[in-house]
Length: 283
Image 1 (cartoon, one colour):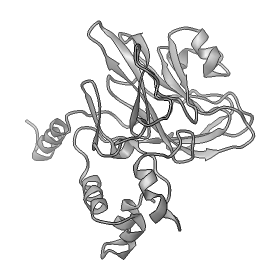
Image 2 (cartoon, one colour):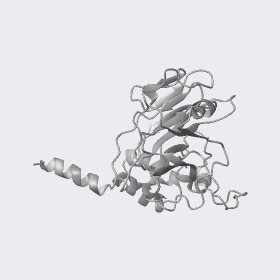
Image 3 (cartoon, rainbow, N blue to C red):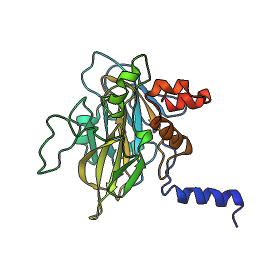
Image 4 (cartoon, rainbow, N blue to C red):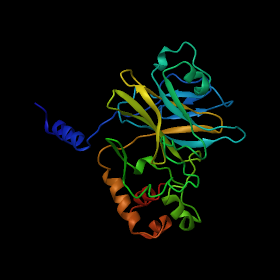
């Protein structure tokens, strides 16, 4: 029989609808990558290549591997690359120098190059959005990201700027999710959604927004690891732990507070503990 604490833990997990383990980087990585002791930060210490990283375990269906860009390096052409691979990272005798094209050319790998613009996959038969009006529009109004049967609280998925002197002017822009995909503090993730035919669709998530199925027909009977290529102008990324099911009480409090203030700097005027103010301002 379970003791009361075990029963409560099981109850909480059922309430959360989904439970996934803590995410980290794999011990196998490119020769130019340094992983911190927590295995949640990956930094490319030289050159622009040999920056391949992987999730430490295969992803579960609907589980997102999410990273935040922590540091950029000017002078290189290209940005972060993300995707999935059916290759166990421990099986490589020599790790590919690049995810594109090297890893993809080995087969059973699907990788998407993140660009400053034009990351959205246009469904067949749909006209492209030449003015970018749909991207980010209403993105933050729905507290959940819904991809088929997968539902994830959006708050942790969205990258935001640090509040500054002109935040009261820029806040409307950031609420509309204008932070560029390749910018520092931008958050980018990858997951796969199972399909009725037994395959999976790979989805890239940028700042809480689904870019559409960037690869279809992925065989999901094999373990699939997340691929993070810390390439070119992207120098350092950190893994972000994601909430599933219900949002945390902290997150719900932040959403209520933000609804009743003019802009983020106005949070400083509230009679709240400093730690809560900092959390509400995304500092």
